Structure formats: structure tokens, C-alpha cells
Image (cartoon, rainbow, N blue to C red):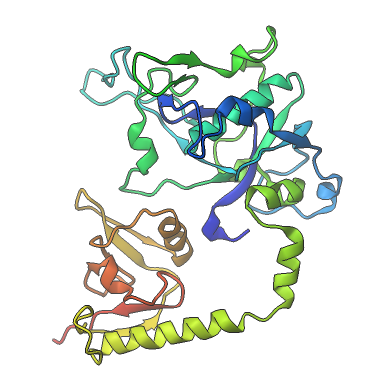
Length: 336
């Protein structure tokens, strides 16, 4: 899997917390979350994983799991997060200095209904130790992931309310569907960063293909076919964007811009966060990853080199140019 998609890892769903205090009892397509949990299947770990060289940024040794869960939906996104401690009324607790108290770091899901279905499946298979293919997302300095802004649970995500309206919900935790002897203390501790977890591509390649929406057979066929159409389209887009950058286009929707297109540098990227703090420099791969997950907005001041002036994100990448792929519009050099 490419770095732009995050790092695909194996993680016990019972070790993951809810990032929202309440979830609906059904998915957007109308399927009930309880019914979906019953559709979760499982498969063994890949026996050939031990003979594959372990990635340098993943856990070594064999995973401590008995099965890999295979749900009827894509893999969930998780983030290693320090939650705020909240009182029963929902207000954040503060220390003697007025600073907000934080709980212990843990993995939190950004897809909470899917987590519920996975936890149901894992709990019902207890004492078998189950894992799921998850996509580890990195925290972006100076910003807050949209889903985590709703984090107002008073239980640090250990349980969740199920219902549509406040006051008409039921509190739920995976212990309710697990055998009576099951407890959180019996779950084997797992790493709190992607580098501490097991590589899904090494130990569960089939489950990974399903979680990522990639059919292995179709992928093999695609590799044998030249992508002529896509390449031609990309060349045309780059040429059009270059024309806009030079100010040669007469469309009033695209006013002339001053600057020139150049290759995206591999490092040196910076942006100004909402608190007016300069973040970075960061490598291109990390910026591409954050963009894919929607962390950058059109007016965000950004530059690809510390010697450049900051420009709005939308101007760095004119229409037709895929951000952080090949080209970036750099401002003209400042004359002495």
C-alpha cells in the first residue's frame, strides 16, 4: 500500500476506542449496525508471513492473534490520540494551572459505527484473539481532525451511546456481548504507534485486499495494462494548468497568476495553521498523505520552500494540477 493511504496495520478492535459519544443504530444505507456485525467473517493469518522480510517501520515477530476479522465494509481509520478528561456533565477537567487534563494515549476510531460492528464480532469470538485490518492516520500538527472535534465522551471512548436523539439512547460497550469472564484487563497490550503494530500486507494480504477495496486479481490485470488514457489526460491537465499559470488563458474564471510551475520538492513544505503558527518543514510524502485525508483548505497559507512567500493552497495548485503529485506553482523570485 502506498504511504498516501496511511499505514495498514493489524489491531484488536477491542483495544480501539470510540471518538464520538453517540452513534446511530444504522448505517447511511439503512443497514442496522447489529445486523452488519453478524455479517463479519474471519480468516486465519497468512502462514507465509513468517518467511517475508518484516518492514522496518512495523512490529517484528508473529502477531499474537488467532484470526483476522473480515467485515463487509472497508477498513476503519484509527489515530493514536491523547483524549481530554471530561466530567459527567461533559465539561473538560482542568488542573491547578487551568490546563486541560489529558487521559492516556490510545487508539481511537474515526469510523465509529464500523468499530461497533467489529467489536461485536470480536467480543462474540472471545477467547479467540481477533484483529482487524486498520488504516493508521497521522495527527497533523496545528490542526484538529474533523471527526475528533466531536469527541466529548466522558468515558474516554470505552463505551458509546446508540440512538438518534439525546435522551433516547442506550449505553453500549463490547463487554455486554462478550462472555461473562471477558474483561479489558485480559487484552494483550498493543503498540500505540503504527511502527509498533504488525504490517497487514505481510500477515493478512487477503484481508487487506478486501479492506482496501482492491481485488488482487483485478490489480494484477491492471499492472499488465498500460495506462495510456490516464497518462494522456494528466499531460493535458498539466499543459492547461501551465497556460493558466503563464496568464495566457482568456477564461475569466481563471485570472492570470504570476509564477511558474516547477517540480514538487521532496521536502521543505510549510503552512500557517489557524493559530497563525508556521508548521514544518515537512516532506512531500507527508503533505500528500494529509491532503488525501482533507486536512488542507483552499485559503490555507502554504509554501514548498522556506525561501518562497506563503500563498493560498488553491493558488499553489491551479485547476488541473493534482496537489503534491508532480508540479506546484511557485511565486516569482523577489527582486532585490
